[in-house]
Image 1: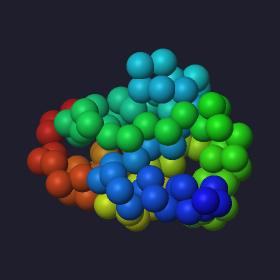
Image 2: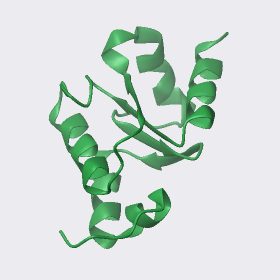
Image 3: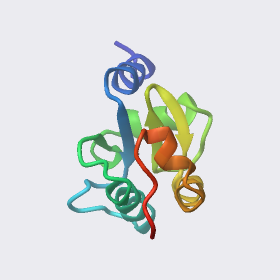
Image 4: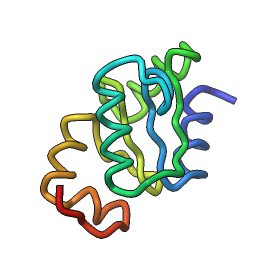
Length: 107
């Protein structure tokens, strides 16, 4: 199975997937920590977190999968949402909560 097929399988088999550096319990960069915190604030506790530092093929392959050069990357229901800055903007506007099917909460 190619790396693109592996990524496609991950994003289509899980409602919420975050490609990040490290793990939700131990993020290895500030952007990944922020992305994890945003998901937590949206009430998303159960999501597939893929540590790109543990798999070089995934780390390089995810960049071409959505034609997005940076990590973290968020996918919801098989669709690419964006990276940390886009997640932050969408969270602040309430749009991310809608995409995730969660009620917007006051920050």
